[in-house]
Length: 361
Image 1 (cartoon, rainbow, N blue to C red):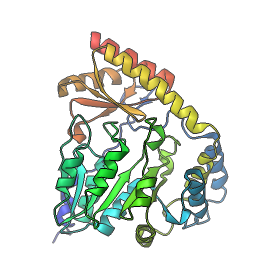
Image 2: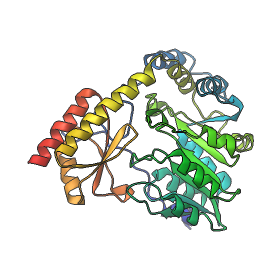
Image 3: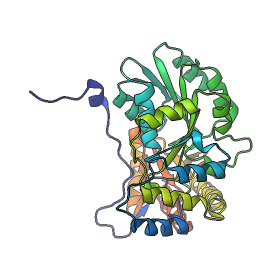
Image 4: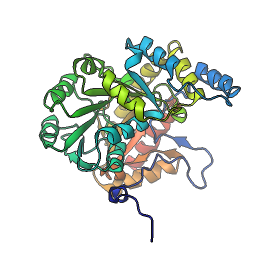
């Protein structure tokens, strides 16, 4: 007899991260995973080096110092914060804890792929709601969540992979339109890059509704994608649930130290946001001038729409010929699109030159 997993597991398409190599090309410019343009903060690198000397010690299972640093940074109660091995781990735990066989999970059509994977892993049925102009349809999500089996609704704001932003009032309207027994998971992985007035990453909504959790990450603006540190802010009851099911040492000691140090890096966020605004604007303007459609973005990446899958594939090949790796979007059912991270000034100029030449070729 063959040992078989639960049937829902076999419906999962494995997550494929952004490419990092091109055969035959020596210098690679990786713009496929929305990593911070400047790498890790200097204080974080120093903290990682120091932590290596204590690598034989188990980490603090409660991540107390990190939770206190996050609380001080964002004005939140550390007791209502939980840290994870990336926010991906917390997404999986939420699906297992609140979903499961016989339940349903709602997400937007172009939402983060890990929601679908984690929900299927838990045994839930995934309901994807069509988007309008690359934005989540709040009315459609409310309608989809009205079914008695729905237990979780996932939404990212601003969204990955589209980069689009919904007004915070729309997120609040989504919460108000859901039953009290439905958990709203608000993923704010790109919150630090948002410059739109009135934007709320989720703190206020969590404080107003005990059935909501805000997820955040150190993988983007803080440049610690390789250290795998995410966190969530929610009601004491939700935090208690996650603390019951997460691994006892789920965030490595070096990762905790690096995250605390990253929060203390003076001027890091301001520098990163200013650079992102400047070069995202320059890249968008240049590509639009070259006749390429770019969807509006409030993140550190842009979504290019070439109209036809073949055209997007040709553009991808033109970029790879110059050592530039971006993200093809076929896995997100957007085969006509490419997602490009805003990298350094040099990297952004290389993207401009490559795609301008491609468009005029």
